[in-house]
Length: 488
View 1 (cartoon, rainbow, N blue to C red):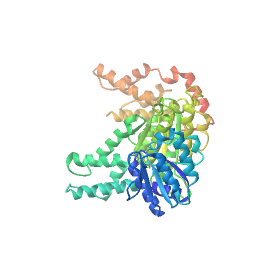
View 2: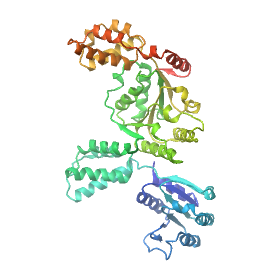
View 3: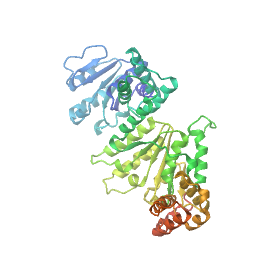
View 4: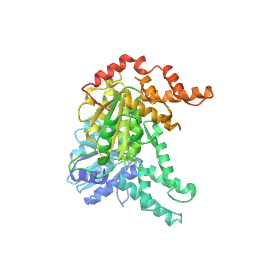
């Protein structure tokens, strides 16, 4: 994910017109200059306030007018990269569009016209000429350079900087997924907060990043301190499958030609641990867990929903290696025809394209309660490494789940008749078994007694499990899974 290399290749490929989407204009200009420098190309920049100027020179006379600036570029015979910043408001003017088209069609060897803005909106008149490119979020190398540069500034200003090389790498990890500007501001804020940079600032950087990621509610950095995969009762097939993929995901211990794992879709009976798998997986692998809420992607403005999804996925890629958790994916990416103006179809197309072409080590865990609502193209082989069906726990699994929840609350499972409890809890989900333990504790508190097998049995008798209240739905889920998914 090297922006400079990417852009240098495009410039060397003699594209006459590039439309570049970027929120960080100064960073983009720095990258353009680095890419152009590799090819020994001069850089000219235009803005509506300064006009057109070659780097290191004064602006050309009267080139604040975009028509004059474009005419000037059209008359030049030498090579160069001509950057027109924030030009999108002008792309509603048919005369400007026509002049851009003429200049792009007439460029000489080594010349490239670059139009920048916060979003790519290509007029149909120049669509066949324009190559669209987006500035990717900063990768580890860029962030590492930023942190080192910022720390050097603090040292020069006599700020105490007491972090070693390993802790600097942890700071870089804590900042991944942010823009250069956001990352720099966070490091400076932490330094100014207590007058020093130390390992104690790393958790604060993670917290601040979580707040920034959650500013629009689409992405959320989840603190998944809920135990490891070993603390989940049952699901032995799924846990074994994930443990094997861990070796490839977080280390270089892999056979040549073996691609990193891409992700899983977990479907099944509600309350049986699908979401818990995502949380414990990230904790087990030592990776950040990023939750994407697909229901919050939708916007009333045309095209903005797709842009939100693209930006969110780019942010997750910048944080790689990471675990991306999409809970109840059917709520945001189900195919609903044209009832919403085609937004859901376009979102689905954007997401499928990312799944096919994505870069970086992002392991996706998607959960679905109503898998029948998902479009078939999302379920075809290759989108996910595997589709697992999470069923109601069996006899041994219920014993394990009850033991986990009793021990978690300070009660020795050996002091209870687990065989009797397991027999009485046929058809209960893991979440329902947890509520039984909690309910029995309240029951024991009301009776001013200790927790006993009897109080647990009373709570079981008072609980109607989902397998009874929605028996038909559970049967339908199992029928769908037969032959279509691997039982976890």
